[in-house]
Length: 316
Ligand SMILES: *Cc1c(COP(=O)(O)O)cnc(C)c1O
Image (cartoon, rainbow, N blue to C red; front, side, top):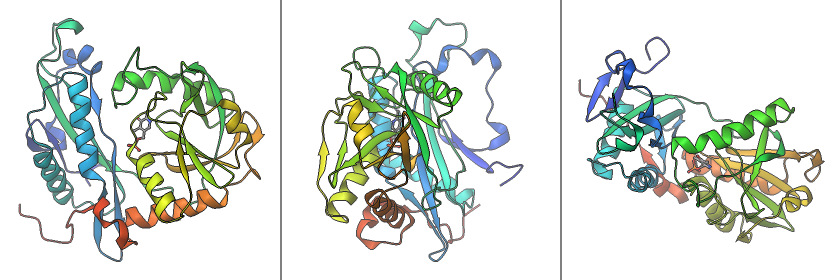
């Protein structure tokens, strides 16, 4: 770390010093309208002296799918990019919980209109520290947003396209101004979709329920992992289906999930207490199982973790 940022990032095929990665101000504008990104976490395990990247392969495959959908050309293989990310974390000697953000955007945009963009892609991968809030007792209150979730007839909700985030940002701002921590967005079918940047799960009668993949949700890797942990560790039933707004009010437990959100228990929705107004047993159990899987305390899910090999000496 130098001046609060890592020493290196990766940009357009090369590892570069942080200070050397600059663009001209006239490149601002349309370059990120069609941009897509990934958000990936790496977790430090002190006992092992090792940094584990969570589901790196799946995240990079999703980046490739996102780029395909917005028609940005990807000039690297997923395997090559995985190698570059590992190399970057080694070069930065990352020994703390970290967020990794690959970002693909239109290149050579200066002086062009947005309709002309997208034949050339630039690719940036940078990292910054992001401590985990798992098992810290963080909870949030939520409201149902007056903003609807974008639908597949308008924008592609299932991919991490930067333009989509105006939707969640409006909902999040509204919620905070109204005195809540976060929001749930209803989709154009009138069903529950997501929170800003996070998926939603609820528990009722001992079952884990989550909006299905055609409810205008992002295809979340955390959601997938938690469904697996619920079935295999907690041994409870998991149901993917449309969810009504009033099911949230009557749920025994509600939480949001995602790479950034990890698991965040929701203790009230529109001032209806969820269960006893505190995180319930299934949320707590999943939080522990998820923590153990991603930090490398549980051998069973080792295929989800890529060890960086941080303790090994790094070639200059
Ligand atoms: C990233 C994201 C999620 C969570 O996806 P993960 O793969 O679990 O990180 C959920 N919703 C939106 C809108 C997102 O951008």
